[in-house]
Figure 1: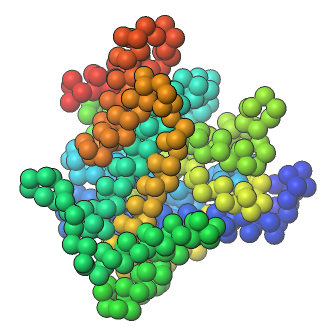
Figure 2: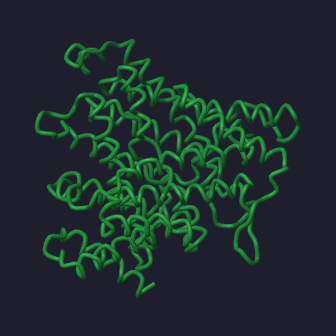
Figure 3: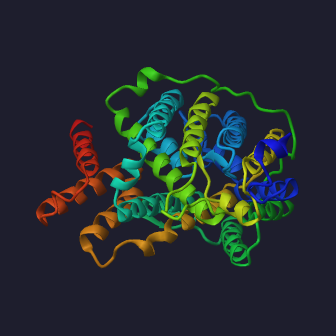
Length: 436
């Protein structure tokens, strides 16, 4: 039945290859089941009031990931894509929206839900293609790198490599601390394994160095399997708060990141999978983007942040994955991890921070493609990069990038050749600063 549904013969694949591809992609993105609840719960920050509950997010992350993968498998059935709550977005929600702006987790989930519905509407209309072609490449790359640097400062803080300072704001932490040293070694190991083409380098690094911490008595081991934590945030969202003036910037930021992250990931995977026709058009991208947007809506209903397509899916494609069967395998493997909550709570924060820092490196690596020879293109991109970590806000970085880009184009005589989308976003960003 599966062979007929996914049409293995047409896509030059088979059941065994699809399963191997699914396992490969799962190993490369399995870290999210540990990092997402860790970030959203503010676990490393201590018992600070207002963050999400760790156990609830752990379960929601796995259920939302599996559900999104199943949607991709059976609706976008020609796409071997893994989906899960996105890195960067989760940090933005935890530190920018909940801790920074003071909104409740329920209000944040309401914003995620609205952004997901808007993404779905865009995916069903010609606006999708217009938006993809309207935002300059340098701005997209600069914003992506800025998210990476935002994750980097959080990761370094979690590891203890960076510490608060009353005068200089930040300073070097106590790097003689054994757990900090272990975290640094975990980070290096992930890079080395990536260089050696070891699949699942992040999850391997997390588990191996956590075992070292447990065995040496530096961290407490709570066990491997246990009962499934209740989904506290299931259908528990606050749309009233989501439609307040202050949330408009949040919703736009969530939508912007998810939309362009998904478009970029799908294009990248399509090139590897041979899904780009002779005219450069990606085949069946509409179904994939709709699956992604429905996944985000489902994720918000389950109780987690924006679900997005993972670029790690490329590993499964390289292993031969060509159909939604790969996505189906990924979803099943995530569901099998529902009982691993005790293991998730046992991971030392320094090791989790190392994984976050590694993911940050992946976000930043494409800055070489920015148009550095044209300062009118590169300057707004750089502004996005430095504003996000320094203002501790992804939305501020995006807003400043678009405002500066629009102003530069006005004063360099490029007003008429600049996309209307730039002006709309720049004006809305300026208004958000004024009314904030």
